[in-house]
Amino acid sequence: MSLNAFITKETVESDEDGPLSGKTIAVKDNISTKGLRTTCGSAMLEDYVPPYDATVVELLKDAGATIVGKANMDEFGMGTTTETSAFGPTKNPVDESRVPGGSSGGSAAAVAAGEADLALGSDTGGSIRCPAAFCGVVGIKPTYGLVSRYGLVAYANSLEQIGPIAPTVEEAAGLLDVIAGPDERDGTTHDEGADSDYASAATGDVDGLTIGVPTELVEGADEGVKEAFWAALDELEAQGAEYHEVSMPSVEKAVAAYYVIAMSEASSNLARFDGVRYGKSGGYEGNWNDAFARAREEGFGPEVKRRILLGTYALSAGYHDKYYAKAQDARAWVKQDFDAAFEDVDVLASPTMPVPPFKLGESLDDPLQMYLADANTVPVNLANLPAISVPAGETDGLPVGLQLIGPKFDEETIIRAASAVE
Ligand code: GLN
Image 1 (cartoon, rainbow, N blue to C red):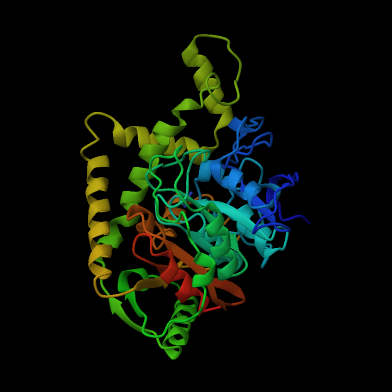
Image 2 (tube, helix red, strand yellow):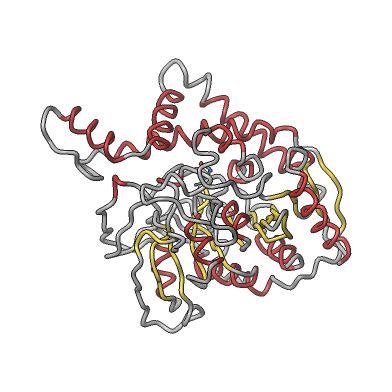
């Protein structure tokens, strides 16, 4: 039985000769591909074929990669399991009764199952790192501004980045080399990364490296996850690194702040899908309000509707200060806690996910449980930092991911440290 890792399975060969020649790649279905359907996992865009390539897709083609299809995902990136996709869930190749994580679950499952050599995902609050952890592969969420978002269908612009998923740290770093760098079509990009050589940072040399472990990001994890996590740190210590616990009290507010900010931005970004400007029309009978309502009623799934409603509420006059402004304050505190921590350590470490992969269907009726599972990944997006998830053992036969977080634009150090764990 198929894992359902792809929404559209179609091969696009490149004529170029480059570092990715001979490599197959799965592209998350919220990244625009010229002439190739791009659905965002939504019925709203089930017939949408973009007239242009995202910058990262142009770069893949220039590098010689062969695109093998558009990977399944939670609808518009909203989820942690890939079950909110309008095209059905993807199964975890390690245990097909479980979810692959999300929202880039199709990308991670395709790589873990060998259906693609490499994949691109996007990470707004953990969507590259979570599925990488759940499927036992490597995922990198780059520093905000390192990779162009031109052609990425926006969920929450201030938080998200496109990044690589691969079987090894070196391959993930090599794919990051291809996609990193400034782009005049995305004003938030940075000169950093223009001449990057992240692949050669995967040396495994951690001698003298100082690692901080935020107590708040470990204490709530499952016992089995904790065991694998501490064993990975002992392995790093045996190779010359040093680790100690640090405290980052503000991260306990991160999930609440993240969801207010992400839903607020989503409610604004998704307003364009009204069946007239963008998205599938539900028919034009009645006035424009009826027509918009019909398109959204038919085009969006329940999780997307929930978030648009909550986001619109948080931004509305009278509630803005109570929710959105407070969430922005919390975001600033999270940044401050990271800045303070990086005065004493080179990298921070935590389990990527506090739990092993959910059983399919298990978390669908309980959105809050799903949101809380993002506790360790969302602080990184709030602070716009780089982080990597690398496989670090297992619990009851299920993969556990180690998350390593670095200071802004210090991808090299987390790549170096992660390559010592493999
Ligand atoms: N699980 C988080 C959410 O649902 C993160 C999603 C993402 O990074 N796209 O918002």
